[in-house]
Length: 515
Image 1 (cartoon, rainbow, N blue to C red):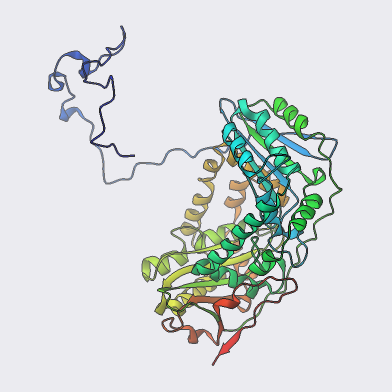
Image 2: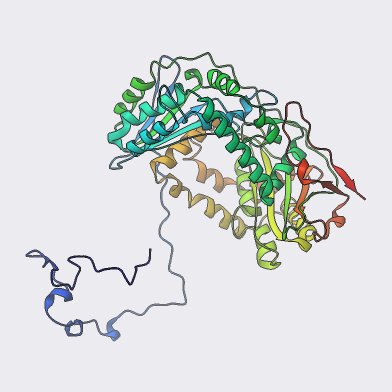
């Protein structure tokens, strides 16, 4: 924060009449010597060692990755607790994992997991939403609950002195929410407003429209937040039933890390959650691996008056745990996961068509989507897609040069220790291991696994996972100014009011072809 030149000088500021003299024996600087700065001896210029400014200073030695040891305890009701100690850190981070993700929803109830997660902090027992908020504010804690496709997570961050009270608050929210009718109506409307806002945003609308084009009618075809049709049909009874069936100790795991001894952490957890009861958890249905969609040409999501075009390439990707996992992580970094990746350097630095282009693999329990995305000047929408497809083809057909591979590998491995600096980061990393069944050595072996990936493995992974015939191309833009799409095949138009779907039994919107 920059200093305000009009701010009053603080009391006892250096140089003021009331400035305190240093204690006896303390080093006296020029301020206290009684002599002007010029009177002090300075090192002559000729004695200052020369500096070679033509060479970059050498990098510091790489940081080592430190993952603390987690102690585990299984309670009688099935709750699994893992705790690790971070000495001299005055904080505690806790994450509760519940088998209550979007993959657990019944058909036609897309958005129920996220809606239920938003409601558990809106009332418990005799306390309403305001009392719950005031209680959390008093604790000085941060508490959030959210759902993704696999699980619902409740995250708590607090000071060690407030841990017992914070755990009680967490337990009240997760185990005993009251789902006040008025709060249900308000929160559901907030979710509907959020869906409308995303449909009004070109980037979000492009993603919402791309998912059903990739997955058809599968659960991954709709975002975790659901769609207006499905969320609007949800009732308070639906939320209560989902909570009763999925928020269960038999499927819960708690991961904690911070400045509290593990034994004390474990005891406090058992004290609060040891008597938690609930229905036996029915296993979530396994994610269905859809057959790749084969769609010719380009889907055009019409956005009349849009100043630029959102271009997307999507495909069914892969789940966690495949043999080529690390090769795909490295391939993504090279293709569009880093600033100096091929797609970004092509579209941004060479062509000047975009501020940024990126790619990603969403690894999940089931095959999440592969995505390539950029926002470009409308007249370059078609050429941009051609360039992106060309970079995918080049990576699938030519081995990556060693220097390019080393640069991407270093970006992934040398930055890894900085993702384990805080208690919250460690809890999140360990939680990911547990949710997706990653090996116990996933993080400690991460760098070695990356070092072992060869250029040929990167090429084979891209060739095997990104079938050109299964890539779905989509542009969200103004039909009047979006150019170059005809070079990619037939253009299939999608009207804005067809971009949202998800009612019970609803199929993806029908696409009308442009001649």
